[in-house]
Length: 305
Image 1 (tube, rainbow, N blue to C red):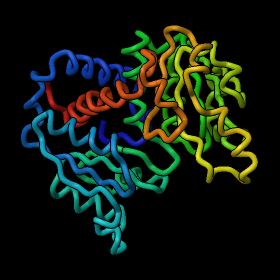
Image 2: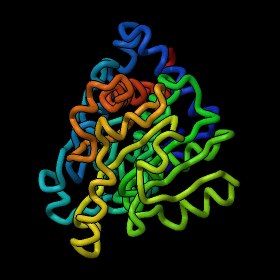
Image 3: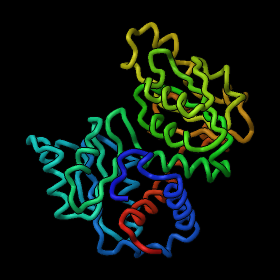
């Protein structure tokens, strides 16, 4: 892989290789403690991030490499008007691989098109895609459910602007017998290009407004935030907001082996009382993110085991 901009930049075989390597790192992390000595990761984060930025940095440090970069546009030359193209050409003078988070869709692709030596990883571009979160999600599902096929997966919340949802759906379309239940207000349904992709693959999906109506069908529930500012009027938000808050009462209707995922951060869409439920998997998911990024960095840099 030269760059990772979209989830489909990786073949299913390459995805499996990264997930399998992540499993081996989980089993014996000390064996990988020096694999990236002398290598540098640049974290180019033009907007706020906790898990993605820190997990990339932790991943490189635990591989024995080093990290440099910035955590906001205001602390970079972007504040002076520097273009993404010029930034990446400069950064490649100092680092071997870069993880970029940017509010504009397509920014990571622009960086990749202008890079000559550095590897570019899209760490989230606007409301578009987030491929390393997708790898995290795939590792979480495979680790906790034992497979990536024959699953009914519920996506709940902001499905219009949720880049993690878009990326995960596109990645799961390549696995057999996947069914989607898309739970959102009408205003926040998945974009047409995602719906068309599901139709083109002949994947079974349904769109509903209430989580309670489908809870008992799900093997995986992927929660996201429903943000007040996405609604056209306050009345609709007030009418629907409680439908997208997961609490212990809703969990009573779920399968005993269902897992609850969330890319985080959460606000109030998952009650803290759910954290005690063994099916709550979102903090495990955050940990898996570090291991899968360790595996991805090794693969992209061509580091041998």
